[in-house]
Image (cartoon, rainbow, N blue to C red; front, side):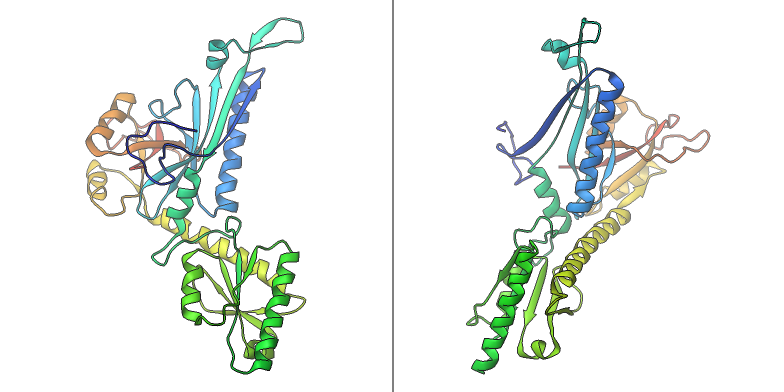
Length: 345
């Protein structure tokens, strides 16, 4: 896709990007709306189970809705700097585009009616969301399912030629085992480079798991594992259990990334009960998500954006019950729904 962007940001807003897009046509409003919601569930599971990113799924406001859609559903991600990214959307288009382009279907009685349509997609913006959710000062941090190299094996240098040969043989055997199990693995057998620089190189590239193999490790029958998410080194059995223990370690990486991102989202989600809370929090380096018992209309939403720069990200699908006679802290009007606001890319 090519489009005009006044100010580009790598991955997030570019003039050219790759796009996954789907369209469906249905006989009824209910079926089309259910399809749009089902696709958003797929995106939510993709973000959580594959990309290790927690999201807030919900419905867009009238102002933020895709032009021409009856409803736009979204998943919102919070990055480490406390800003939101719209990571994927699914649109219930109603019959608007069907009528504009005269898309009809033949009913069982032979008559013709306009279809009820959906449109949905994610783009390379997801890559930006992953990078900004997980990476650190060392470099890239990738969830295992996304990493082109999931495991790097490092045979340790040894001056004893016999021990060195045994180490290289064990490292090659381990590589073959992991490859046969469809694990994306690289053997770094550059023995003329010290371990430190090699550690940094693969950490910077975001490889989820490092396995070190030295003479002492062979004696113990285990490689030393190190996860990109941190923590102490731990043994990975050499031999029959190598594949299973490596898969478990990769799953531990995914869970650690998801938990870390969820903890960040929890710590940077603020329930706003007074306007001053919102204004004070917007001065912070990482502003975060603002959960507001919203009572405003489209004009109130536009006014708040003009005053503060925050946008209404979504009305979350999961809604707590509002208190009786609860008032919106921004407009002073009776609250009608919980809404998530944030500064965003």
